[in-house]
Amino acid sequence: MNRVRLLAISGARHIPDSSLLLGRVKRFLWAAILAASPPISATGQGHEGHMMVHAEQPGEAAVWRMPPMDMSMPMLPGLESALPPVGPFLPGAGVDVSEIPEARPGEQVQLDDGDTLNVVVSLVRRHIAGHHMVMYGYNGQYPGPLIKANRGSTVYVNVENRIVLPTTVHWHGIRLDNAFDGVPGVTQAPINTGEAFLYEIKVRDSGIYWYHPHMREDIQQDLGLYGNLLVADPDPNHYGPANREEVLILDDLLVDAAGPLPWGDEAPTHALMGRFGNVMLVNGMTDFGIEVDRGEIVRYYVTNVANTRTFNLTFRNARAKIVASDVSRFEKEQWVSNIPIAPAERYVVDVIYDEPGEYATTNSVQAINHFRGTFYSSVDTLWTVNVSAEPAAASYRETFDVLRSFDEVTADIGTFADHFQRPPDHTLELTVKVEDLPLPIVLAMEIDTLYVPPMEWNDAMPMMNWLSTGKQVTWILRDTDTGKENGEIGWSFEQGDVAKIRIFNNPRSFHPMHHPIHIHGQRYLVLSIDGVATKNRVWKDTAIVPVGSTVDLLVDMSNPGEWMLHCHIAEHLHSGMMFGFTVRPGELDGDQASFWN
Image (cartoon, rainbow, N blue to C red; front, top):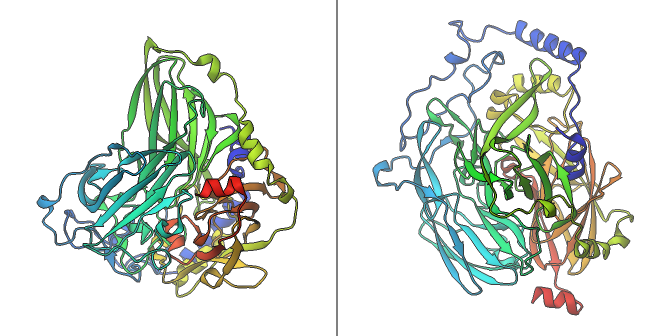
């Protein structure tokens, strides 16, 4: 993998090769804990004696089952019969499954200025990885409808709720009017069962955006409530030419031999690391693929909707260049061989397929075995491209070979240059506190933090992660100037302010972990990571803060209203890692006023 390019795009630092000494120390300490404790069970059984897996059927009431895990890793003594301190939840319990419609692939919907789309949130049936499942869908589709709109237009989406959980819809990354941001208790009341809410969405920026619930995202989003909004620019040369476009949503789902593992009802499980899945999905499918002709350029609009997994997209033998991210194009196109993409991030990437054959785009990472203190290579195919021997009907190779610069992006960013070097207005520390976790987990975590990676690419402690819930784990955003945490923080700005925010991810916390930080309603620049200035800037709404790193953000506080800042790992969000801030209406100059009107 091209680590230099990985750094340039995300700031995620290279995970070093594992230390033999570290591995030996970890194994020695783990062995000491195991030796000092009684056998795993009185019958001498290992993991299989914990919770027997039965052939669960869709519509049954949920029961707790131990999560899938590496059977070579010993179970922590004292946890043989442990269960999360919340009840299990599965959708559709007690419902006649035969009355639930089969989900269908997502459809494209073009909305012109003033058009309205009606969306129903309901139960659907899916067949994934050999399992029949009850899940959720927007208009019975997976993913939800791909909404296409033109920049500058205003469209309307009427959302009706037919599931038992209250819901809302957040229009992620779109600088829309505050009243339609979809945050319950802040911009709207929850949409309860049988109720509806009309969203007015003015799309002011071209690019790829997405929509999802902002209530119990760890459940609703994981069960299929997500979709894209693709905003076209009036300039036909906004991007370079391509033979085709593909809008792709990356996700993962946690299943075992009986089907999807239940979610926590009162609070999220997997609160330490987030709920990693073991089945990879692209547009809701495990076997997504396309067919192209030799020499075709495919433009991918990629969105990560996973609860916690950061994917590392690797294009292998295909040439790829990155063009845009969350809220704008980059200042200049850039050749890449891999792209790390955290939950809620989006990237636009152009890929050329020069030779016939099959190309695999993979998630390629250095995973960690915490018990052994070692790293290992983990590669999962996400989607395939079959390239025929027939030449492309139109060749754009000459244009593709040139890395374009976008002067208007550089000029726009340049208007904020006076703020790049000044001291931060606010400083945040990212940390965590726990209470009432089982003692074996606390002891094991003390060993585990002998070394912590900048990025958690995989769940290397499934049992401990599953047993930790939002009742025991509080992820913290701390204002270091005031000492206030999470909901106690109440920053206030005036429209037109430019806020410099410094974020330090404390590596000495109970379980250090990277965090994708999302800011509602605004756009921001990642100015620097650990004091190293970003060379190729792009407007973002979500970006990774690695463990141990200090990241400077420059936020264009241009959109008035009551907004949120939070981690976009769903289990961290619902374990407290969020706060609100205010942007008061202010006087704008002519260009700014025109943009917002």
